[in-house]
Image (cartoon, rainbow, N blue to C red; front, side, top):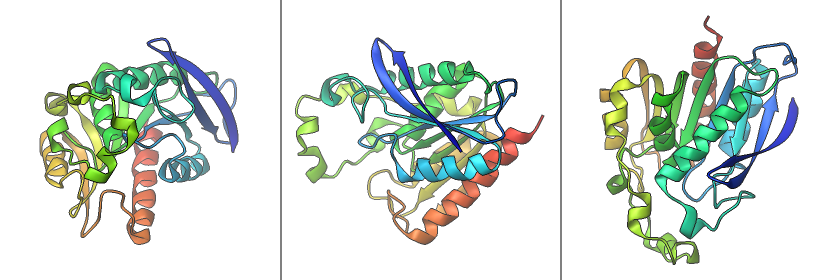
Amino acid sequence: MIIKKIQFYADNYRLNGTLHLPETASDKGKTPVVIGSHGLLSDGESPKQISLAEKLNQRGIAYFRFDHRGRGKSDGLFSTVTTFQGRVNDMTAAIETIAAYTGIGGPVGLFGSSMGGAVCLGTAGAYDIRTIVTLAAPVRLEAIRIPPNIMEDPLFDEMKPEQMAFDISENLGNTSNILVFHGDADEVVSFSNALEIYENTAFPKKLTRFSGGDHAISDPVFQQQFIEEAVEWLASALSKK
């Protein structure tokens, strides 16, 4: 695995990311790539994304993970710069940056966890995205139930509810080749969101339901299943001519 640190800009915010390149990548090649979007309070160091990067590299696929504005090492104060459209703009900039990176140039897939899944669905229609994998993704802001103890975090002190308003239901009809993961005991984003995504997107598509699974998919058995199924789905979709 070859690891490259990459900085890029979205709306004048400097964002930091990590590109995982497989050993088979070359300057003249057209390596396929998956770009990841993390959850609302997470960042690009998500263990799920790192595991995906490692496993996909073994299949000859690059992986790019980055910190959205206001998170991790990227610019901006979370409570004031975090908006749904801002995160879509971050992802747009990431797609354009990585698609133009020397040696990439192959088909592009997206992975999004929680809010990141909604970001992927809200971005995909504007680009030639081969496939999408989502995990515990909400369709609209009203579907999210943030626990009171988290809302008391100082991060939210200056945040206004309308900052994160979104509804990506209209995007679903133009989305295909999607793998949807969701726990049916999700305490933050109800399982009904997964059903709505699955029912309104086009084939090929698949819904994997984790019986009793929570929002974080904290059960190690579910985590392993997620990695194995996601890697197989992404590798299969991105290897097709």
